[in-house]
Image (cartoon, rainbow, N blue to C red; front, side, top):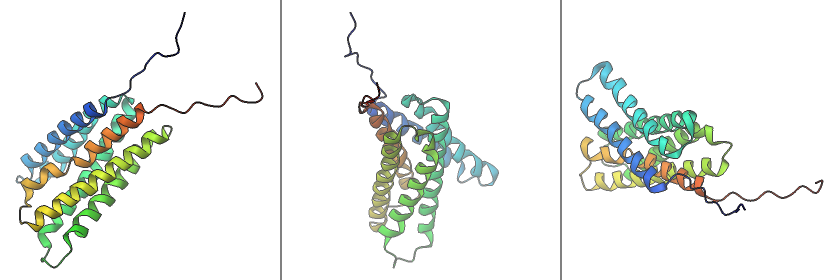
Length: 192
């Protein structure tokens, strides 16, 4: 006797978020350790650290090698865009709208990065869009927190580091959650 109620559990959104947070921490360590050194090491180590952290974290999603590379690329590109937005705050005069100056670049960079990096999920449309949405919400959240910290004069390099991985954490968790959603049953063809 067989039953049709066998449960297949997908990746855990909480474990995915935790792994992406640890992966982001690894990237932040690489960035903090090399930023003062300058040279080629400061250019190569942070992207490699963020890529390696996201590559490892994407293992929780059980999407294979292409999935790991896709998440590594998305997190690395989004991180680079976020970091450039944070660096641009050094040139602000105080007359800018910091919410727009930080949130919009974070949002654009991370959403575009997720859209390009998560292309391997195209056959899983729901997971692709949830992942992109997770990156976008995370970018808006981290950009908003950065703007609030800048308004209170609490934003500097080290206080902004924890904000950089937030889009990847929410993107990974949203993708894991979408992979657990039940798929809609297909209709039987009238020809059968």
